[in-house]
Image 1 (cartoon, rainbow, N blue to C red):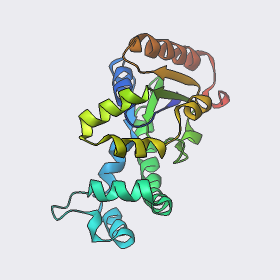
Image 2: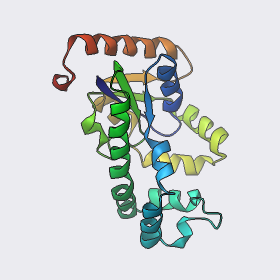
Image 3: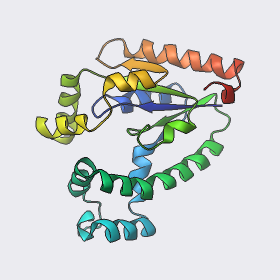
Length: 203
């Protein structure tokens, strides 16, 4: 089985691309979703408060997304600390999930920070999803009700599209045109690779 990373910047539409792979019958692991769930584990809850104060959680018990986002995008040391708490647990969960889906021809691991977290090292192939910046901003404004300045700040804190494309094996341009043919081409390539090549020898 081939392990395939799927990544892209905020507003690139990688989650939509992931849904297409899922519709094709490919198991998709959403790293960002699983990471969010971990914030409510008792041990993680305790570590987050210890390192970042009670403000990291709302009175309702929910994670304070605004406060957390401010930490992530303005303090690299704090971000590294959060990653050191969350990412090992995500990796552990992903490895269990892999065993449950070992019969698949290949699996997709969707992650916004695939390279930053080091998770790319465990992938055989990686797909980058990019999109024109104005379209990205438009999507995020519609989804999160954010303003343009906040979105641009987040975009500038992530890897550039050029760097993503250079570091990945496949590239999907999500500009609202011919998206399905791009996904199908990669899908068929990965199916062939799984049948003809030992995944350990791919990268």
